[in-house]
Image (cartoon, rainbow, N blue to C red; front, side, top):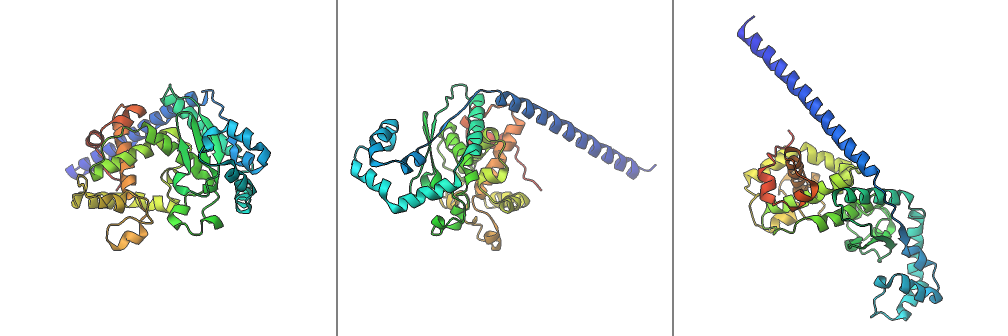
Length: 332
């Protein structure tokens, strides 16, 4: 047997060892996650979804006083009753209510997902208390689809009628793409993530990436029943593109020395919601938007895998600490 054969045999043995080690580690991680999920499933929570949208749609002027008593926070004192009565009788509003009723006639699956989200929140934050969950309409104000406070959650259902709904024909396609029913729990998780994340100053491109990476990792832990494409608001094809090009994206950021840059244009190019990311290359039109968020997500995931850190502690950690202790290496 020559030296080359010995080296080759040793190399093969090492590959087998690493492969088996990976299987064992993956098995251990899956078992650990399964134990956590079983514990979470046993948490007793039963949220109630109050259908204010339906109550208002079926109300008469005589019901206004009762509605204002039950939902005082939804009625501005500066708006006279006559305006609310006009809204009840407006044909366009009634059409909107009907469209919502057709999509959300029986939101049982929505309740199940929100219940699961709240159970996960209770597991990671023992002080969490279940808020009132109220559905309503807001004239398709897609910038405020969900509102979260310590005691109340508001969900504007008219923003989730489906990506190709006629009401959305004047809304840019990359925005309308996520105006679907299955994005409600994702948007809700993001609003909670924003409440838990430590508000560090986001001065550099890396700061921005890590901030949004934290929000996405929070979804990993709080809504693990959602797939990655839904969590980030990509189509499956867009997620596949990001995964396939993770290495060249990272190389571009490194070679252009973007990580510690404070150029505000970088957020517009790679962080802000947009139809595509802006490398100023031919591949731009093939790329999904928000690739800086995607890379930040992978960095935070790498940090969580390599460090014994709880979710809430991770949400408070400084971006530089996360990056330097992540040993992040993109997928090849």
